[in-house]
Image 1 (spheres, one colour):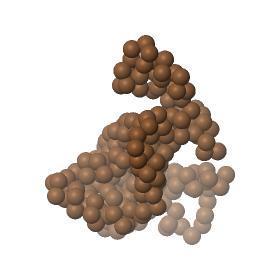
Image 2 (cartoon, helix red, strand yellow; image 1 turned 30 degrees about the vertical axis):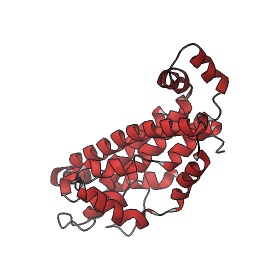
Image 3 (cartoon, helix red, strand yellow; image 1 turned 45 degrees about the vertical axis):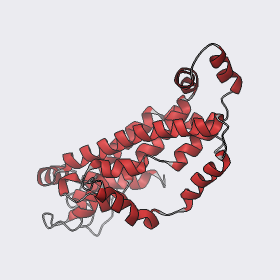
Image 4 (spheres, helix red, strand yellow; image 1 turned 60 degrees about the vertical axis):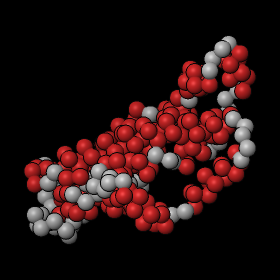
Length: 256
């Protein structure tokens, strides 16, 4: 109930004119629910552009990042090469470096590449997901080496072994990576705030911050709650689709 109630209260506020900020009385359901907040914000703000930007960044970024994580995790788990331990340790060390430290150099690289105010400015720097690579490696360690050796003896090359033998066993892993990757990119605020500038190019989290000071609304909280309610739906859909794989993947990667 503690986890669900804020989401419920957000939906109730979205159905209340002005949110619940114009009333000193707290209530669990409005006496006169209305869709006026939705109509007002969708009519005056480019909400569909914001949703489209977030969907493109989250979908494409997650798909590419999952591919990178699967390949890197497989290499670190199943290939023996000089410096593998040092390289893996270096990957893990980067988890401890906060984004604020690398914000300026990352922005300079994106700016020199001419990608500022573009969705690719958000997608490309986040393709390397250390947590995703860690989870993928832990999962790949459980794939029997004998299975890979049998494929190679049968004449399968390295790419075919990975695609035809390893990937079919990675359904739970893919579910975990998709849910975590999509959620992180959909909710990301700081990096899109830095590299996206035009109002129609913003993602939903950044756009929500602009509504609180928007003079077009007498009380912005109704509009904020309306947009926030709509933006929860894609996350719920992704989780419901990959729910079973997510639970199996978390159980099988040693993170219990």
